[in-house]
Length: 115
Image: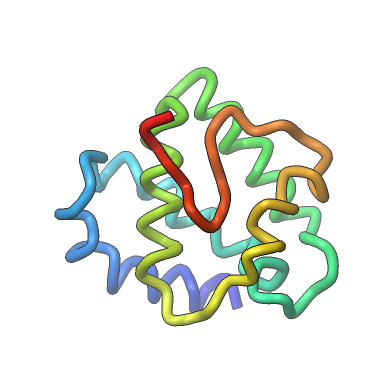
């Protein structure tokens, strides 16, 4: 599933990138790693995988000491608006809780990356 979603993100995201302020090269690490959480986010699995939670921790570290929270938020927003699968709203907000972490960037159905 992660490889298929990763390919779809790469194929679709180029045109979506024009609507955002984030550098496309900066999002690549998010595009490569976010698909590990898709089985949980679409409802196929009840809990996020260990690989998914590790990526969530990594994203949090990048937000604090690398890309910054706004850029990560925008990259994730690009994913959520471009993938053909319907994400479960409750799962989006549950992801940090289920991975036992607090995120330094917003992640929800109605993300506001400017906060």
